[in-house]
Image (cartoon, rainbow, N blue to C red):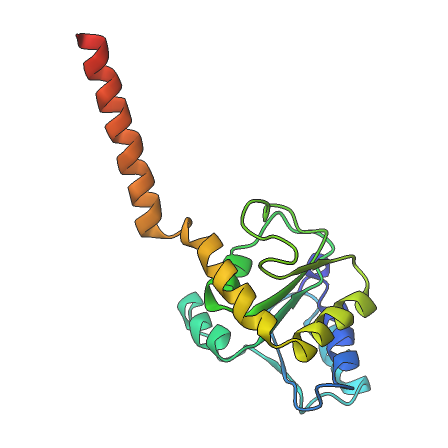
Length: 178
């Protein structure tokens, strides 16, 4: 709940999306300097029964259950140097909508293939949420593509890469010796 991650805009986007997903619930991080401002906006929009903070989380590993119970992640960040949360959400198969102000997702996250990248505009985010609702097959398509994209970031794939690299170095050393 920090300014660069734009939680107030996330609440505004969610409020607009309620017009066509009235059963939706927004789950938000519980920590940050904007917590009070977020709570005030939630009250002013009468969303207290629709927006919940992750106050109960004791460890990062508990996020798996949150991701498993979520359908769409919106991340209207004003700036981010990349965020492992995006990779985790991709691995979970969630529909993902990111702002175009997030760096470090190149080569893993691709607009229209693994999710959507939007301008920092609430209505554009809402349009993309509506696209997920009206084209539910996007969840499956993006989930398959996202899981494939982040697979290269797993421990086992990293170990394979290191093994291949080490084997190449050993071969090169042997070739120099002969």
